[in-house]
Image 1 (cartoon, rainbow, N blue to C red):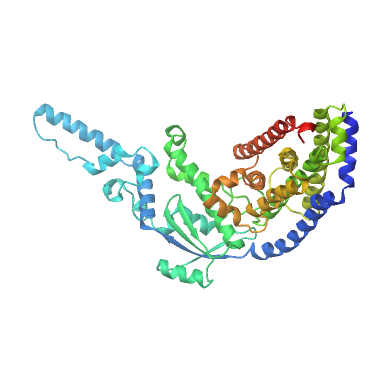
Image 2 (image 1 turned 90 degrees about the horizontal axis):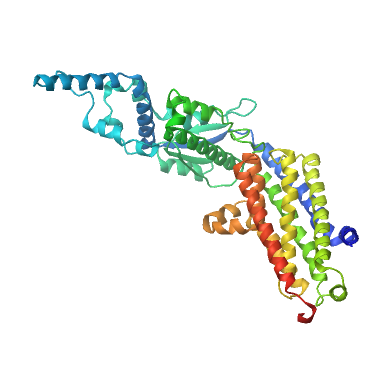
Length: 470
Protein backbone atom coordinates (compact mmCIF):
# COMPACT_ATOMS: atom_id res chain seq x y z
CA UNK A 1 0.00 0.00 0.00
CA UNK A 2 2.79 2.40 0.92
CA UNK A 3 4.39 2.22 -2.54
CA UNK A 4 1.09 2.63 -4.35
CA UNK A 5 0.10 5.71 -2.34
CA UNK A 6 3.60 7.12 -2.79
CA UNK A 7 3.47 6.74 -6.57
CA UNK A 8 -0.07 8.12 -6.87
CA UNK A 9 0.80 11.18 -4.75
CA UNK A 10 3.89 11.94 -6.85
CA UNK A 11 1.80 11.76 -10.03
CA UNK A 12 -0.86 13.97 -8.47
CA UNK A 13 1.73 16.60 -7.54
CA UNK A 14 3.28 16.66 -11.00
CA UNK A 15 -0.16 17.04 -12.57
CA UNK A 16 -1.05 20.05 -10.45
CA UNK A 17 -0.52 23.13 -12.61
CA UNK A 18 -0.95 25.49 -9.67
CA UNK A 19 1.63 23.64 -7.58
CA UNK A 20 4.20 23.53 -10.41
CA UNK A 21 3.65 27.20 -11.21
CA UNK A 22 4.31 28.48 -7.69
CA UNK A 23 7.13 26.08 -6.81
CA UNK A 24 8.94 25.86 -10.15
CA UNK A 25 8.00 28.25 -12.94
CA UNK A 26 7.43 31.35 -10.81
CA UNK A 27 10.74 31.04 -8.86
CA UNK A 28 12.65 30.38 -12.10
CA UNK A 29 11.09 33.43 -13.79
CA UNK A 30 11.72 35.59 -10.73
CA UNK A 31 15.29 34.33 -10.41
CA UNK A 32 15.95 35.11 -14.07
CA UNK A 33 14.73 38.68 -13.56
CA UNK A 34 16.88 39.01 -10.43
CA UNK A 35 19.96 37.75 -12.27
CA UNK A 36 19.70 40.16 -15.20
CA UNK A 37 18.76 43.15 -13.05
CA UNK A 38 21.25 42.75 -10.21
CA UNK A 39 24.21 41.47 -12.23
CA UNK A 40 24.23 44.69 -14.24
CA UNK A 41 24.18 46.78 -11.08
CA UNK A 42 26.88 44.82 -9.29
CA UNK A 43 29.21 44.50 -12.27
CA UNK A 44 29.09 48.26 -12.83
CA UNK A 45 30.05 49.01 -9.23
CA UNK A 46 32.21 46.18 -7.97
CA UNK A 47 35.46 47.68 -9.34
CA UNK A 48 34.71 51.28 -8.53
CA UNK A 49 37.01 52.99 -6.03
CA UNK A 50 34.95 53.86 -2.98
CA UNK A 51 35.51 57.31 -1.45
CA UNK A 52 35.22 57.32 2.34
CA UNK A 53 36.07 59.64 5.20
CA UNK A 54 37.98 57.96 8.01
CA UNK A 55 38.04 59.58 11.44
CA UNK A 56 40.49 58.09 13.93
CA UNK A 57 39.95 59.06 17.55
CA UNK A 58 42.98 60.02 19.63
CA UNK A 59 41.92 57.37 22.14
CA UNK A 60 42.32 54.70 19.46
CA UNK A 61 45.85 55.85 18.66
CA UNK A 62 46.77 55.87 22.35
CA UNK A 63 45.28 52.40 22.78
CA UNK A 64 47.47 51.12 19.96
CA UNK A 65 50.53 52.89 21.42
CA UNK A 66 49.92 51.28 24.81
CA UNK A 67 49.55 47.86 23.19
CA UNK A 68 52.75 48.25 21.21
CA UNK A 69 54.59 49.64 24.24
CA UNK A 70 53.63 46.63 26.37
CA UNK A 71 54.52 44.32 23.51
CA UNK A 72 57.99 45.79 23.10
CA UNK A 73 58.90 45.77 26.80
CA UNK A 74 60.52 42.38 26.39
CA UNK A 75 62.95 43.90 23.90
CA UNK A 76 64.20 46.51 26.42
CA UNK A 77 66.45 46.32 29.48
CA UNK A 78 63.51 46.75 31.85
CA UNK A 79 63.82 43.28 33.39
CA UNK A 80 67.57 43.68 33.87
CA UNK A 81 67.19 47.17 35.37
CA UNK A 82 64.52 45.98 37.82
CA UNK A 83 66.73 43.05 38.85
CA UNK A 84 69.68 45.42 39.35
CA UNK A 85 67.53 47.78 41.44
CA UNK A 86 66.30 44.94 43.63
CA UNK A 87 69.88 43.81 44.14
CA UNK A 88 70.89 47.38 45.03
CA UNK A 89 68.09 47.53 47.61
CA UNK A 90 69.22 44.24 49.16
CA UNK A 91 72.83 45.48 49.40
CA UNK A 92 71.72 48.82 50.84
CA UNK A 93 69.57 47.10 53.49
CA UNK A 94 72.51 44.92 54.47
CA UNK A 95 74.75 47.98 54.81
CA UNK A 96 72.04 50.12 56.37
CA UNK A 97 72.42 52.75 53.68
CA UNK A 98 70.28 54.13 50.87
CA UNK A 99 70.32 52.25 47.54
CA UNK A 100 72.85 53.56 45.04
CA UNK A 101 70.35 53.64 42.11
CA UNK A 102 66.85 54.98 41.61
CA UNK A 103 63.82 52.81 40.89
CA UNK A 104 63.70 52.44 37.07
CA UNK A 105 59.88 52.40 37.10
CA UNK A 106 57.39 54.77 38.70
CA UNK A 107 54.60 53.73 41.04
CA UNK A 108 52.06 54.52 38.31
CA UNK A 109 53.88 52.34 35.78
CA UNK A 110 54.27 49.50 38.29
CA UNK A 111 50.55 49.70 39.07
CA UNK A 112 49.79 49.58 35.34
CA UNK A 113 52.00 46.53 34.87
CA UNK A 114 50.22 44.71 37.69
CA UNK A 115 46.72 45.70 36.57
CA UNK A 116 46.88 44.51 32.97
CA UNK A 117 45.71 40.92 32.60
CA UNK A 118 43.52 41.13 29.49
CA UNK A 119 43.29 43.31 26.42
CA UNK A 120 40.40 45.28 27.91
CA UNK A 121 42.68 46.35 30.77
CA UNK A 122 44.86 48.19 28.25
CA UNK A 123 42.10 50.74 27.73
CA UNK A 124 42.58 51.98 31.31
CA UNK A 125 46.33 52.56 30.94
CA UNK A 126 47.72 55.92 29.85
CA UNK A 127 50.69 55.96 27.50
CA UNK A 128 52.25 58.69 29.64
CA UNK A 129 53.03 56.25 32.49
CA UNK A 130 55.60 54.43 30.32
CA UNK A 131 59.19 55.50 31.07
CA UNK A 132 60.66 57.04 27.93
CA UNK A 133 63.73 54.81 28.27
CA UNK A 134 61.68 51.70 27.60
CA UNK A 135 59.64 53.02 24.67
CA UNK A 136 61.15 53.11 21.18
CA UNK A 137 60.87 56.14 18.93
CA UNK A 138 58.82 54.03 16.53
CA UNK A 139 56.17 53.48 19.19
CA UNK A 140 56.27 57.11 20.33
CA UNK A 141 55.68 58.29 16.77
CA UNK A 142 52.69 56.04 16.03
CA UNK A 143 50.09 58.07 14.16
CA UNK A 144 46.80 57.55 12.36
CA UNK A 145 48.44 56.00 9.29
CA UNK A 146 50.03 53.28 11.45
CA UNK A 147 46.71 51.99 12.77
CA UNK A 148 46.06 48.39 11.61
CA UNK A 149 42.64 49.24 10.15
CA UNK A 150 44.06 52.16 8.14
CA UNK A 151 46.79 49.90 6.76
CA UNK A 152 44.11 47.38 5.75
CA UNK A 153 42.12 50.06 3.90
CA UNK A 154 45.20 51.38 2.10
CA UNK A 155 46.23 47.88 1.01
CA UNK A 156 42.83 46.80 -0.37
CA UNK A 157 42.85 46.37 -4.14
CA UNK A 158 40.63 44.75 -6.74
CA UNK A 159 41.89 41.84 -8.82
CA UNK A 160 43.26 44.20 -11.45
CA UNK A 161 45.27 46.13 -8.86
CA UNK A 162 42.93 49.11 -8.73
CA UNK A 163 42.65 50.63 -5.22
CA UNK A 164 39.41 49.68 -3.57
CA UNK A 165 39.20 52.54 -1.06
CA UNK A 166 40.00 56.23 -1.46
CA UNK A 167 40.41 57.97 1.88
CA UNK A 168 39.09 61.52 1.69
CA UNK A 169 40.75 63.90 4.15
CA UNK A 170 38.34 65.76 6.46
CA UNK A 171 38.98 68.12 9.34
CA UNK A 172 35.87 67.44 11.38
CA UNK A 173 32.87 65.17 11.80
CA UNK A 174 30.63 67.96 10.50
CA UNK A 175 32.64 68.24 7.27
CA UNK A 176 32.47 64.48 6.78
CA UNK A 177 28.71 64.41 7.29
CA UNK A 178 28.30 67.26 4.81
CA UNK A 179 30.27 65.31 2.17
CA UNK A 180 28.20 62.20 2.89
CA UNK A 181 24.94 64.07 2.59
CA UNK A 182 26.03 65.59 -0.74
CA UNK A 183 27.01 62.17 -2.10
CA UNK A 184 30.74 63.01 -2.37
CA UNK A 185 31.67 60.04 -0.20
CA UNK A 186 30.03 56.65 0.33
CA UNK A 187 30.47 56.48 4.08
CA UNK A 188 32.11 57.75 7.25
CA UNK A 189 34.24 55.24 9.15
CA UNK A 190 35.02 56.08 12.76
CA UNK A 191 37.88 54.23 14.44
CA UNK A 192 37.37 54.43 18.20
CA UNK A 193 39.62 51.50 19.07
CA UNK A 194 41.45 48.53 17.60
CA UNK A 195 38.23 46.54 17.31
CA UNK A 196 35.76 49.40 17.71
CA UNK A 197 34.91 50.45 14.16
CA UNK A 198 31.63 52.09 13.15
CA UNK A 199 30.20 53.04 9.76
CA UNK A 200 27.76 55.80 8.83
CA UNK A 201 26.04 55.65 5.43
CA UNK A 202 23.07 57.34 3.78
CA UNK A 203 22.43 54.69 1.13
CA UNK A 204 22.21 50.91 0.79
CA UNK A 205 24.02 50.28 -2.49
CA UNK A 206 26.88 48.02 -3.43
CA UNK A 207 29.59 50.36 -2.12
CA UNK A 208 27.96 50.53 1.27
CA UNK A 209 27.63 46.74 1.37
CA UNK A 210 31.32 46.35 0.53
CA UNK A 211 32.29 48.77 3.31
CA UNK A 212 30.13 46.84 5.75
CA UNK A 213 31.79 43.59 4.66
CA UNK A 214 35.28 45.05 5.10
CA UNK A 215 34.54 46.32 8.60
CA UNK A 216 32.82 43.14 9.77
CA UNK A 217 35.69 41.03 8.43
CA UNK A 218 38.30 43.23 10.08
CA UNK A 219 36.48 43.10 13.40
CA UNK A 220 36.26 39.30 13.26
CA UNK A 221 39.97 39.05 12.58
CA UNK A 222 40.78 41.57 15.33
CA UNK A 223 38.63 39.59 17.77
CA UNK A 224 40.86 36.63 16.96
CA UNK A 225 43.93 38.77 17.70
CA UNK A 226 42.48 39.81 21.06
CA UNK A 227 41.65 36.18 21.87
CA UNK A 228 45.28 35.23 21.27
CA UNK A 229 46.49 38.18 23.37
CA UNK A 230 44.28 37.14 26.28
CA UNK A 231 45.50 33.52 26.17
CA UNK A 232 49.00 33.09 27.56
CA UNK A 233 49.52 29.74 25.84
CA UNK A 234 48.46 31.06 22.42
CA UNK A 235 50.37 34.34 22.70
CA UNK A 236 53.52 32.45 23.68
CA UNK A 237 53.64 31.05 20.13
CA UNK A 238 54.27 34.53 18.71
CA UNK A 239 57.31 36.77 18.95
CA UNK A 240 55.31 39.98 19.35
CA UNK A 241 51.89 41.54 18.96
CA UNK A 242 52.92 42.68 15.49
CA UNK A 243 53.39 39.07 14.42
CA UNK A 244 49.86 38.25 15.66
CA UNK A 245 48.42 41.18 13.73
CA UNK A 246 50.39 40.29 10.62
CA UNK A 247 49.19 36.69 10.63
CA UNK A 248 45.51 37.37 11.34
CA UNK A 249 45.09 40.40 9.09
CA UNK A 250 47.33 39.40 6.20
CA UNK A 251 45.54 36.06 5.88
CA UNK A 252 42.17 37.78 5.56
CA UNK A 253 41.06 38.38 1.98
CA UNK A 254 38.76 41.36 2.41
CA UNK A 255 37.96 41.64 -1.29
CA UNK A 256 37.40 38.12 -2.54
CA UNK A 257 36.47 35.98 0.39
CA UNK A 258 36.50 38.18 3.47
CA UNK A 259 39.02 35.84 5.04
CA UNK A 260 36.41 33.16 5.37
CA UNK A 261 35.03 30.36 3.24
CA UNK A 262 32.67 32.52 1.23
CA UNK A 263 33.16 32.79 -2.51
CA UNK A 264 30.57 35.40 -3.45
CA UNK A 265 30.58 38.88 -1.97
CA UNK A 266 27.85 40.12 -4.31
CA UNK A 267 25.33 41.57 -1.82
CA UNK A 268 22.50 40.75 -4.23
CA UNK A 269 23.07 37.01 -3.82
CA UNK A 270 20.98 37.36 -0.66
CA UNK A 271 17.94 37.66 -2.93
CA UNK A 272 18.64 34.15 -4.23
CA UNK A 273 19.07 32.83 -0.68
CA UNK A 274 15.59 34.17 0.02
CA UNK A 275 14.30 32.74 -3.25
CA UNK A 276 15.52 29.23 -2.39
CA UNK A 277 14.01 29.62 1.07
CA UNK A 278 10.70 30.61 -0.53
CA UNK A 279 10.68 27.51 -2.76
CA UNK A 280 11.45 25.34 0.27
CA UNK A 281 8.48 26.80 2.12
CA UNK A 282 6.21 26.58 -0.93
CA UNK A 283 6.21 22.84 -0.35
CA UNK A 284 4.05 23.56 2.68
CA UNK A 285 1.04 24.17 0.42
CA UNK A 286 1.25 20.74 -1.19
CA UNK A 287 1.76 19.06 2.17
CA UNK A 288 -1.13 20.94 3.75
CA UNK A 289 -3.41 20.17 0.81
CA UNK A 290 -2.84 16.41 1.05
CA UNK A 291 -3.52 16.48 4.79
CA UNK A 292 -6.71 18.50 4.43
CA UNK A 293 -8.04 16.25 1.66
CA UNK A 294 -7.63 13.31 4.01
CA UNK A 295 -9.98 14.88 6.55
CA UNK A 296 -13.60 13.78 6.48
CA UNK A 297 -15.02 17.26 7.03
CA UNK A 298 -13.13 18.64 4.04
CA UNK A 299 -13.80 16.28 1.14
CA UNK A 300 -15.58 13.12 0.09
CA UNK A 301 -12.15 11.61 -0.44
CA UNK A 302 -11.44 12.25 3.24
CA UNK A 303 -14.67 10.51 4.24
CA UNK A 304 -13.74 7.41 2.26
CA UNK A 305 -10.26 7.37 3.76
CA UNK A 306 -11.53 7.83 7.30
CA UNK A 307 -14.05 4.96 7.16
CA UNK A 308 -11.76 2.63 5.23
CA UNK A 309 -9.58 0.01 6.99
CA UNK A 310 -6.42 1.65 5.63
CA UNK A 311 -3.73 2.42 8.20
CA UNK A 312 -3.94 6.19 8.39
CA UNK A 313 -0.41 6.62 9.75
CA UNK A 314 1.11 4.66 6.87
CA UNK A 315 -1.15 6.46 4.39
CA UNK A 316 -0.08 9.93 5.59
CA UNK A 317 3.56 8.87 5.81
CA UNK A 318 3.50 7.78 2.16
CA UNK A 319 1.96 11.09 1.17
CA UNK A 320 4.53 13.02 3.21
CA UNK A 321 7.42 11.15 1.58
CA UNK A 322 5.90 11.70 -1.87
CA UNK A 323 5.53 15.45 -1.34
CA UNK A 324 9.09 15.61 0.00
CA UNK A 325 10.51 13.74 -3.01
CA UNK A 326 8.61 15.99 -5.43
CA UNK A 327 9.69 19.12 -3.58
CA UNK A 328 13.35 18.09 -3.41
CA UNK A 329 13.32 17.26 -7.14
CA UNK A 330 11.89 20.68 -7.98
CA UNK A 331 14.44 22.40 -5.74
CA UNK A 332 17.34 20.53 -7.28
CA UNK A 333 16.17 21.56 -10.74
CA UNK A 334 15.72 25.22 -9.73
CA UNK A 335 19.07 25.31 -7.93
CA UNK A 336 20.85 23.79 -10.91
CA UNK A 337 19.20 26.35 -13.18
CA UNK A 338 20.36 29.20 -10.97
CA UNK A 339 23.94 27.95 -10.80
CA UNK A 340 24.49 26.50 -14.28
CA UNK A 341 22.30 28.70 -16.48
CA UNK A 342 22.22 31.99 -14.59
CA UNK A 343 25.77 31.47 -13.20
CA UNK A 344 24.79 32.44 -9.67
CA UNK A 345 27.54 31.64 -7.19
CA UNK A 346 25.92 30.76 -3.88
CA UNK A 347 29.31 30.43 -2.20
CA UNK A 348 30.68 27.40 -0.38
CA UNK A 349 30.90 23.75 -1.37
CA UNK A 350 28.44 22.74 -4.12
CA UNK A 351 27.66 19.41 -2.47
CA UNK A 352 26.88 21.20 0.79
CA UNK A 353 24.62 23.64 -1.06
CA UNK A 354 22.57 20.82 -2.60
CA UNK A 355 22.44 18.91 0.70
CA UNK A 356 21.38 22.03 2.59
CA UNK A 357 18.62 22.69 0.07
CA UNK A 358 17.33 19.14 0.33
CA UNK A 359 17.27 19.23 4.13
CA UNK A 360 15.67 22.68 4.12
CA UNK A 361 12.80 21.40 1.98
CA UNK A 362 11.78 19.16 4.88
CA UNK A 363 11.04 22.25 6.95
CA UNK A 364 8.56 23.55 4.39
CA UNK A 365 6.81 20.19 4.06
CA UNK A 366 6.61 19.77 7.84
CA UNK A 367 5.11 23.26 8.28
CA UNK A 368 2.37 22.33 5.80
CA UNK A 369 1.82 19.04 7.63
CA UNK A 370 1.39 20.91 10.92
CA UNK A 371 -0.91 23.63 9.57
CA UNK A 372 -3.02 21.00 7.77
CA UNK A 373 -3.74 19.29 11.08
CA UNK A 374 -4.44 22.45 13.09
CA UNK A 375 -8.13 22.83 13.84
CA UNK A 376 -11.02 22.12 11.48
CA UNK A 377 -10.83 25.30 9.40
CA UNK A 378 -11.40 25.17 5.65
CA UNK A 379 -8.51 24.71 3.24
CA UNK A 380 -8.75 28.37 2.13
CA UNK A 381 -8.11 29.56 5.70
CA UNK A 382 -5.08 27.31 6.06
CA UNK A 383 -3.78 28.49 2.68
CA UNK A 384 -3.97 32.04 4.01
CA UNK A 385 -1.94 31.02 7.06
CA UNK A 386 0.73 29.48 4.83
CA UNK A 387 0.70 32.56 2.60
CA UNK A 388 1.51 34.69 5.62
CA UNK A 389 4.31 32.32 6.63
CA UNK A 390 5.86 32.05 3.16
CA UNK A 391 5.30 35.44 1.52
CA UNK A 392 5.14 37.47 4.74
CA UNK A 393 8.13 35.66 6.14
CA UNK A 394 9.99 36.16 2.86
CA UNK A 395 9.37 39.90 3.06
CA UNK A 396 10.57 40.04 6.66
CA UNK A 397 13.74 38.15 5.71
CA UNK A 398 14.63 40.55 2.87
CA UNK A 399 13.16 39.06 -0.31
CA UNK A 400 11.44 42.31 -1.32
CA UNK A 401 13.40 44.81 0.78
CA UNK A 402 16.96 43.70 1.62
CA UNK A 403 17.32 45.79 4.78
CA UNK A 404 14.15 44.44 6.36
CA UNK A 405 15.94 41.54 8.05
CA UNK A 406 18.46 43.96 9.61
CA UNK A 407 15.62 46.18 10.82
CA UNK A 408 13.86 43.21 12.40
CA UNK A 409 17.17 42.11 13.96
CA UNK A 410 17.51 45.53 15.59
CA UNK A 411 13.90 45.96 16.71
CA UNK A 412 12.74 42.39 17.42
CA UNK A 413 15.59 39.87 16.98
CA UNK A 414 13.53 36.96 18.33
CA UNK A 415 11.35 37.10 15.21
CA UNK A 416 14.37 36.31 13.01
CA UNK A 417 14.96 33.21 15.12
CA UNK A 418 11.46 31.83 14.54
CA UNK A 419 10.81 33.09 11.00
CA UNK A 420 11.42 30.03 8.76
CA UNK A 421 12.48 32.22 5.80
CA UNK A 422 15.05 34.07 7.92
CA UNK A 423 16.37 30.82 9.40
CA UNK A 424 16.83 29.22 5.96
CA UNK A 425 18.41 32.40 4.56
CA UNK A 426 20.88 32.44 7.46
CA UNK A 427 21.77 28.83 6.71
CA UNK A 428 22.83 29.65 3.14
CA UNK A 429 24.51 32.86 4.25
CA UNK A 430 26.59 31.08 6.88
CA UNK A 431 27.54 28.44 4.30
CA UNK A 432 28.76 31.19 1.95
CA UNK A 433 30.59 33.24 4.56
CA UNK A 434 31.87 30.60 6.97
CA UNK A 435 31.76 27.34 5.07
CA UNK A 436 30.86 24.04 6.71
CA UNK A 437 31.69 24.79 10.31
CA UNK A 438 30.33 25.64 13.73
CA UNK A 439 28.01 28.44 12.62
CA UNK A 440 26.67 26.41 9.70
CA UNK A 441 25.93 23.42 11.93
CA UNK A 442 24.24 25.74 14.42
CA UNK A 443 21.87 27.13 11.79
CA UNK A 444 21.19 23.66 10.42
CA UNK A 445 20.43 22.57 13.98
CA UNK A 446 17.78 25.26 14.20
CA UNK A 447 16.27 24.03 10.91
CA UNK A 448 16.22 20.46 12.24
CA UNK A 449 14.60 21.51 15.53
CA UNK A 450 11.89 23.52 13.76
CA UNK A 451 11.21 20.57 11.45
CA UNK A 452 10.89 18.12 14.34
CA UNK A 453 8.64 20.49 16.30
CA UNK A 454 6.32 21.03 13.34
CA UNK A 455 6.10 17.29 12.67
CA UNK A 456 5.48 16.54 16.35
CA UNK A 457 2.67 19.10 16.54
CA UNK A 458 1.15 17.74 13.33
CA UNK A 459 1.27 14.14 14.55
CA UNK A 460 -0.20 15.10 17.93
CA UNK A 461 -3.09 16.92 16.28
CA UNK A 462 -3.61 14.09 13.79
CA UNK A 463 -4.03 11.48 16.53
CA UNK A 464 -6.87 13.49 18.06
CA UNK A 465 -8.99 13.69 14.88
CA UNK A 466 -11.72 11.11 14.47
CA UNK A 467 -14.64 11.08 12.03
CA UNK A 468 -17.24 11.43 14.78
CA UNK A 469 -15.72 14.66 15.97
CA UNK A 470 -15.57 16.33 12.55
